[in-house]
Structures are given as C-alpha cells and as structure tokens.
Image (cartoon, rainbow over all chains, first blue to last red; front, side):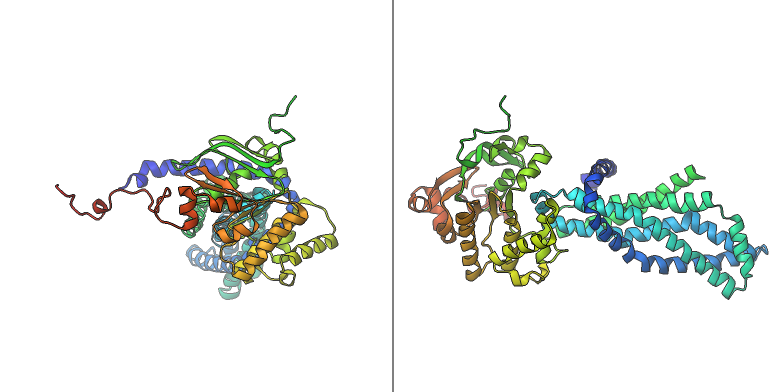
Length: 257
Length: 278
C-alpha cells in the first residue's frame, strides 16, 4: 500500500477537505450580500438546477410511490391492514424517502453538472478572467449556484412527495382496490403537518440542498484545472454528497423526532 | 504622512518591478528581477519557455505574490493593496489571456458587454453602442451574435481584445496574443495594438515569442532568462546585441546559456547502460 493511500492519509485528507469546505462556506456566506446584484444569475441557475431536474424528480417520485404502495399492500394484507397503506406511504415519503431520494437525485443530476461547469470554467481561465475584470467569482459564480440549490431542493422535494403519493394512490386504489376515501382519510388523519411535513420535507430538504450545493460548488471551484481533475471532482461530488446526505439524515432525524 | 503603497508621483514608469523573487515548486522563477514599463509605450517581454513571462503578468495584476520584492502599478504597490483596491486597479487594466478565456455561456456581444454590466449602470443603448464600437475596432461587429464555440482561435482572441479594451484601460497585458493567428489576423492584431497605443495612449505589455511581429510594434524589449533580465532595449539594439543570450534566443540555437534539455541525470544511466570501467 502506497503512503498516499494509507488509512491515516485518507482520514487526514478527508478531514482537511471538510475543513476547507467549511472555510469555503464562510466565504460564500460572506459574499451573499455582494451577490444580490447578480440576482438574475441566481434565477438563471435556479432554472438550470431546479426546473431542469423536474423530469427526473417527477418520474422517480412516481415510481418510488408506486413500488412503496405495492410492497406495503403486500405486507399489510398479512395483518388485514391494507387500509393503512396510504398513511404509511405518506409518512415514509414525507419523513425519509422524499427528502433523501430527492437529494440523492439532485446530487447526481444538478450537483455533478455544477461541479463540471465550474471546473471547466477554471480550466479554461474563465474564473481568472472574471477576477481580472474585477468581478468576484465567489459572488458571481459560487453564491448563485449555492442559493439556487438551497431554494430548489425543498421545491423539488414537494414535487417528489406529491408524485410519490400519487403513485401510491395509483397502485393502492386504482390497481389493488383500496377504498379511495379510506386511503385519503387515514392519511390526512395521521400525517402531522409539523412533525412530518415541516420537519421532514422542509428542514431536511433545505439542509440537504445546502450541503449538496456546497459540495458541488466547492469541488468545482477547487478542482485541478485538467480534464482528469474535473472528472475526479465530479465523482467526488456524488460520493461526498451521498455520504453526507445519509449521515445527516440520521442526525436530523434523531434531532427532529 | 506618506501612504505606504504610493510611489513617487513623478515616476514615468507605469509598472515598476523591484527585486522580485519568486520560488515555485522549489524552482526560482525570478531572482531579484528589476523592470520598468514606461507609460504610453509598447513593451515586449520575451524569453525561453518556462522563464516566467506569464507569471510576471500575474504578479503585475496581483493574481500572484512574490516571495520578496515589490511590484508597483501606477503608484500602487500591488501586494499591499486590499482586495477592493486591487479590484479598483484591475478595472483600469485589460488582460488578454493566452486562450482568450471567453465566457462560454454568453455570446460575443454579452462577453464584451460583461465588464460594463458588472461595473456600470449605463443604459442599454449606451452599452450596445460601446460594445458594437469595440467589436467594430476588432473587425467582428458582424459576429456579435455568435457563441464562443462558433469562433476560430483568431476570432476568439479578437473578441477577448475587444473585451479587454471596453473600459479604455490605462494598461493592457497581452499574453501570447499572436499564437495560432494566420498572417492576416496577425497583421490585424498588430495594427490594433499599435492603434490602441497611439490613439488612446494605452500602455501595452506584450508577452510573445514572435520576434518579427514584436519588432513591428514594440518600443522596448526585455529578454528574461534564469529569473533575471538578460538583455533590454529597443528592437534594433536588441537585434544588434551580441550577447550569448540574444544570439541564442533570436538565432534559435539549441546550444547556449539556455539549456535545451530540462535538467536530468546521465542518459546512459537512465537507459540502464553499464558505466564504463565499472
């Protein structure tokens, strides 16, 4: 095993990256007031990372809801509790699957594209050109993409949840014959606005949006300006985001329950 | 009280480099380098590849800081400037990158308009007029709607030049402006550099290898090697200079003070041949 791949080195390098990422977050937050004049750029990025991710989020949300409905109906029918299918689908999607799967999809779809875009901007001297034109690249490039991610994630998560429940309804009610009224009434009676929707959908997705966007922007901004560097940075965005999402999900769930 | 970052106001040099020493990756790129770039003139910086010509431009613009020494631009010590002051200074400097560095999300018009939109509140009509005037100057008014990917290397270079002069800067730094240009485009760029210098009085610094092109426009040439200025003067003086540096560089000789080979060990040992007598 080479020295650079030793476990100690990997741990040290990871800790160092986390530290640098934290300092980068401070730079981003400090640049937020300066970036307000680039509000059009933020809206443009919101379109790229948000609206352009809608299709994948909708399709995946629908299928996750459908498979959840199918599995739960199968299990609940053993205990004669198929009427609870809607409730369990909704709670599972609101509390866990909605924010987590949306964030994982967002990291794969939007995070990688942000990393590659910024990495290529660095490799082709566009970031340096901005600095030479006295334009702060943190305020113009990093902050709009970060803010767009933070804003887009809860919205995408809402879409995912809506399509997920629709998918569960499609399978449970239209296919397997659960009563429509039972499906909705059990769900609305059990799902709690604060505990399930606000804590689950809103808080988690805002935190995941911030984390994924931060990782994506940081990896792109600090990547070596080579094609190999950009490729590695894109991979690191997916790996680091996925680990961060799942680890943070546990922490947030423990605190929010 | 004298401001520590201000030089003497009567200084005719727009850029002054004093005792600049820079070490990169263990290699001394500059070794107490001294240089003056006079106002309103075209100064060429030449030298073998890897001697730090682009690095010197980065020092002038504050993108890099030396390990020792000072770089002064228009009376400001660059390394002592705050970020805001450095950005104020950069608004008065145009920089032409080797690879043009156009913003790939924007078309030609928006690339040239970018600095205006970022730093001014000018009405759209005025921005349009300024941008089209600058594009006309580089012969690309008709290409305003093209994207950077639709441009040839020479066209991209000219768009980058239009962007660099959109604020009528006091200083333009050209990093390898002639690379990849066909003879027509090269002549156009040479004319542009000369015209900008004569009509607007812009001080120009050219980093280039093309001696014939440099001879046509440069007022002063610096030849740097081994981290120091090894020869300087007007093009004629440099051409007549008989020093080994100028002979080798301008004569294209592989043998001379600048080694062709990057420092390496014995070739025979590298190829695994046994040493004689061993």
